[in-house]
Length: 169
Image (cartoon, rainbow, N blue to C red):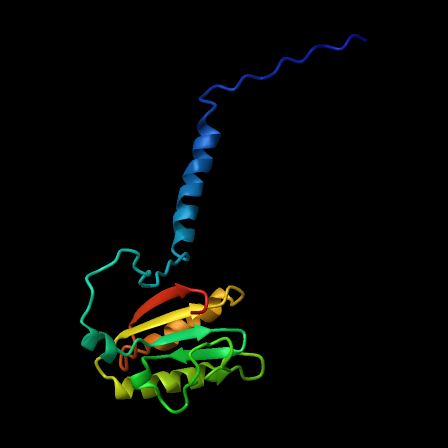
């Protein structure tokens, strides 16, 4: 009872055909899946490092210099002292003063933030700049949401030129 050795059958044709078939099936699948991937960019001005020409003291004193700091307590507004509103903190040190808009139920009160920005915009129609800063432990989503609220909408723009700063100043 001798066992016969079986010879392997040799197929005629190119051995790359199965790989080519796989690639031909994957290309349309990848192209179809790419339609669902969307990218979004946020326009943000980075702080300038280079020093510019010194401005006149009169122009410097009239600027609004709206700065909003996001802390774990809420929103802190800083403006030029001549443009300070009654609801804004009188202290120059944001760490010692309480927030101008405290957190509501352990979450940031973006509706009140939007109302206060509209109030500032009504008084300073030509102002388009705002500086946003946040503490290191603030979530990125909170910062982006604050940027969206500060820009306003296309029908009612508030401060479309957003500059980010690091930390609380």
